[in-house]
Image 1 (cartoon, rainbow, N blue to C red):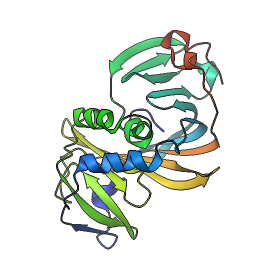
Image 2 (image 1 turned 120 degrees about the horizontal axis):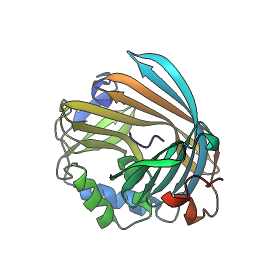
Image 3 (image 1 turned 90 degrees about the vertical axis):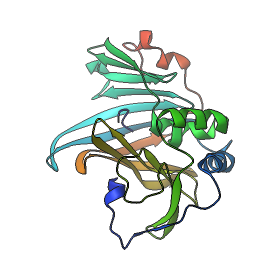
Image 4 (image 1 turned 45 degrees about the horizontal axis):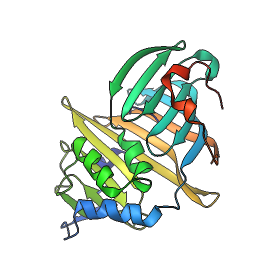
Length: 246
């Protein structure tokens, strides 16, 4: 799950059909997501992933990352193993970046993928709604559509052709995240949560695709997936990054 970071606005018209936005508001959708999975979703997720980097739609590099998620709000990433000392920690709506074991940068950031993919099931809907609004998604706007024969609610815009409004796509049968789109500094960033698989009874998106302005940038594919019962909080302490292992 990349931390910073599909082509849902470029999908084939045969697979996507938009309808008028019904009476249920975006806030109600968030409440439905929470109600569907509260107490049933996995709080902890451990996995590895191949990360394919693309330039001009051609793969130019591949890495293997290790990740450990603890909802709500905590994610620890290591790039190409623990010994490199390279990675990042997401904690309390902030992200800390590390190179060679040394923290090089910190910034405030609400991680939309964590928020909509995991945290939404572990915190009050009001908290998710407040944070989602801060990311620029207008929950008063939206529309229903069909993607791959499944009902989907798009939040953040009333217009399927809109490529300049921040938006998210929610599966209305399973009530989990499918896509996020963000428009910033004249560029459209799209992230697709795909290849959902049922693992130990849990739905897990095992392939995440990133695009910028329609160009493929990165593809993550998860493997060695497990669900730890407990995760030590010290693993999300930036001061303990260098020595952290799991």
